[in-house]
Image (cartoon, rainbow, N blue to C red):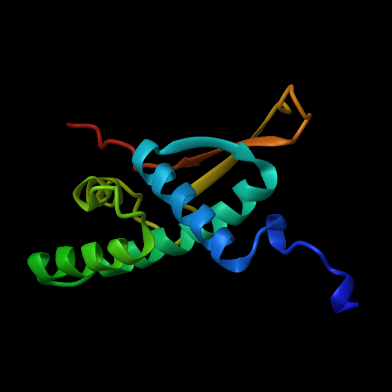
Amino acid sequence: MKHLRKGGKFSRKKKQRKALFKILVGELFLRSKIKTTEAKAKELKALADKICGKIKRSFSDSDEEQREVKILRYMKTIFPKNIEPKLLLEVAKSLPQQKSGFVRVIKIPARRSDRAKMALVEIIKKEKEEKR
């Protein structure tokens, strides 16, 4: 019954949950690796993969200046205001040339204080090409 449900997903209201993941995605792109709970990591992976996919599709535009403006505008809507979009653009350029699978979730031992299941979320970067 609907009236008996207390919390929402992650025991947060929609706006709070949206703000939480906005911050998590921003930190993931800045640091390229973060540690969080498994449940948040799974949600974060889906969200970050969508963002990375959209950014990679934007790189297929022909005009480089128009492409960067398009990506920066999109990033301003998704990431927190305190994150510099130019730094995020560098991370976006380092993504591998594929359609999906830009983010990896690795399970790690539980947190000692409350035994919460933890996971490491990281962005997969393309390997450097060997010079011949």
